[in-house]
Length: 278
Picture 1 (cartoon, one colour):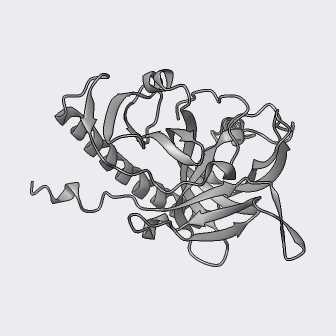
Picture 2 (cartoon, one colour):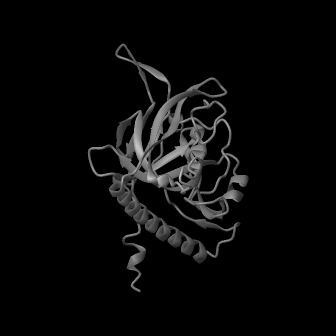
Picture 3 (cartoon, rainbow, N blue to C red):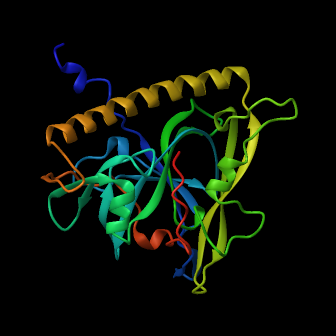
């Protein structure tokens, strides 16, 4: 009734995990160093406006529990993020598209906006728990993009993200398997694209099934994350409705994109991944 609920308890601020896919080699003090090939956690939950978030190296393999999958669209102009949409679930969801070129916000379905701006690419955001075995599991947002979503260069034993998610079916007892019931190991593997340039991408491997106590932790984290995402989506829908938005409406806005890796850190996909709604 007071409206305070619009501002308290619904903001989802998590650190962001991604792969540094840069396979370039640089000489430093007589040693040759590979610039990427490791996962990193950006401390975006603590990021101050206008400042680059601190980064923590996690190694070339990490273990996570995948809880909730969403998507967004991004377009790059060299090293900078040029256009980006709000996060959504499916290609027909109404989203906000922001641009680095101006302060306008364009509203429309993700499908229509991708058709209009052909350089937009899919990013899958996976909300999950980061496991390191030494402390409480941490809720994070894992960004998966580029060759990890679809690449003609992938080895037969390296699934795409979509193939991995689709691999959960029924077990030997005929019971439905769920992604959140298992740990997932993410590891960096090197590939060469059609241009011959090497880069690192993500290999997805199913880990052990969660014990009952860890499953309870994962389920509680999912409920918390889902509730805050629902609240954020409702606030966005209310904002769009207040603007009396249609697919052609353009409104003023000045939101900044969240911290993201440079374009050189991760290759563009060799082929566009299917627009699979999760």
